[in-house]
Image: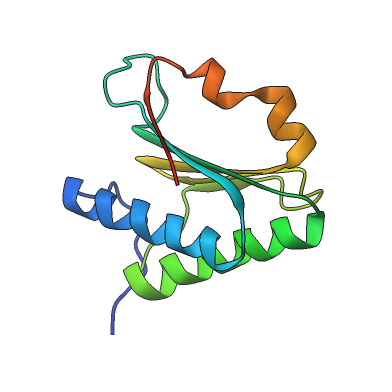
Length: 125
């Protein structure tokens, strides 16, 4: 039986984690799924951001809970930190090298993370 871990993932595990998160948010019909590679930005707090949005709070909750469940069951990983699980306007889930941002549509437009981190390599899914 795998024990759950809270450790910094290895590079190949980071790629698997990214894909699992992208698949998980897509499972719950998240919109505007974007990966920002921040590995060449020394000021970045993480190596990768995955950003997505939904139009309502129940869907944001479903996306967040589904991705955390899949990452826990399929990779044995727990988030280091999570925020926004009370109001579901902007949920942040931190997996060390990968930080997930799930926004309500209006909040995503307001904070415009892609513009803020435009020095990174942006991939839209």
